[in-house]
Structure formats: C-alpha cells, structure tokens
Length: 231
Ligand SMILES: C[S@@+](CC[C@H](N)C(=O)[O-])C[C@H]1O[C@@H](n2cnc3c(N)ncnc32)[C@H](O)[C@@H]1O
Image (cartoon, rainbow, N blue to C red; front, side, top):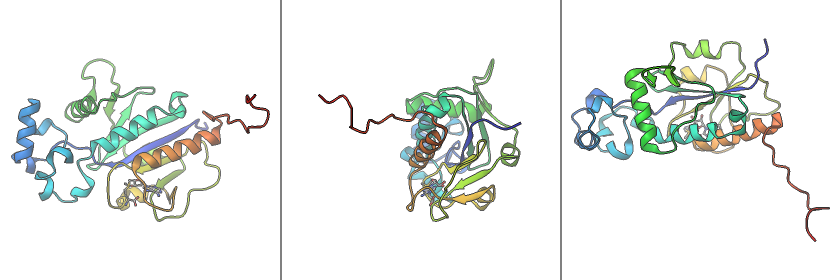
C-alpha cells in the first residue's frame, strides 16, 4: 500500500545520559547536587559539563540535547505534522531509536524537555505507566526505513532536487559538528539542501517548507499587489 506523508529521522543525535567516566566530574557532581539526581540519570549537556567533557572521545558531537529539542519543536509545529503527514523519529549517537505517538507535542521549556528525555533514557518509555507517548523502539534503522526512498542530508553533496516521492524518509544529523557516520550515510542517497553547512534546525525548516509546498499544505497565499486591498 502506498504511504502517505514523509518520515523525518534525526540521526546520531547528541542526546545521551552522562557516561560513567564522567560520574565523578566536578561539574557533573555540582549539577547532580543542584538537580537532586544521580549523574547516571542526567543528560550530558555541554552547557553545564563542558569542562568535564574535555576527556570524552568525539566530544564535538555529544552533549547537545538543545539541538534535538529545537529541531523537534520545529518539526512538531509544522503544518505537515499537524496534518498527520509526518512521522518523526530520533536516533541517538549510541544507537537508541525513539518513537513518538502520532500527534504528540513536546514541552517548549528546555528543562522540562530534558527531564522527559532523562525519564525516557532511564525507563525506556514516557510516561512510565499507561499508554506510552514516547518510547525506545526495538526496530533497527534498516527495519524502520525498509521500503522507503531514503535521502540522507549532508552538506558538500549533490543537491536534493525534483519531486520527492510520497513516503520518502529524510535523515538529518542531530548534532553540532563533524560528518554523519558512514553507517548513517549508507542508509540512502546523500544530498544537500544548500551550498554551505547549516544547523540541524535550519535544515529541518527548509526541508519541511519545501515538502509542504510540494504537497500544497500550509502555503501562504501572497497577493501579487495587483487588485489587492490598497485603496
Ligand atoms: C550542524 S550539521 C553537522 C555538520 C556536518 N559536518 C555537515 O557538514 O553537514 C547537522 C546536520 O545538518 C545537516 N546539514 C547541515 N548542512 C546541510 C546542508 N547544507 N545540506 C544538507 N544537510 C545539511 C546534516 O544532516 C548534518 O549532519
């Protein structure tokens, strides 16, 4: 059966709990005390743990829950999502896949978002009881994307052009710096949306706007000026 709508996957996202090697870090312990949580149940966040993170491998692609938060808000505020024509998933750098119940909305407050993601990563589902709204999926990325045309978005690659087929999946890195891992690039055709590197949020915005234009959703009916309301 033909699929209706698109799939957005934030891949290799910089969203993880504080790793064991930082549990005794000065900044980690200070933020744990302030929040009344053990380090193992807190998100790694460069804005609070930047000094401690200096010892971490690939730290330039870690500890940025804010990137995921902003990109998810943009996607979930889009007409495409509101019309039920966009599925959204988050894949983390350490290989977890987050699924969202269709139509779910997230807190706009960053601290509340972090609390939600901490609960999800510790308990594998939110809320812990009752019907889950967000959960850690058992699916592999290959299973998730099977049967779809997949575009992996990366700067310095051939431009994404032409009509994008219904059911297509778009993979955008949910991290701050460095290339997408080759295991992610191999999921589909690697394409760019602009000639220079953009933020994750800018890429999601550009992409959703053009998909909405293509599907005739949320178009702004600009007046040409002729025969308008001017007296
Ligand atoms: C801040 S960037 C990471 C930087 C990465 N070195 C790059 O060049 O795309 C986050 C993600 O945004 C997407 N991205 C950034 N600029 C892009 C562009 N011009 N075209 C397509 N995707 C882009 C990629 O998926 C990337 O992984």
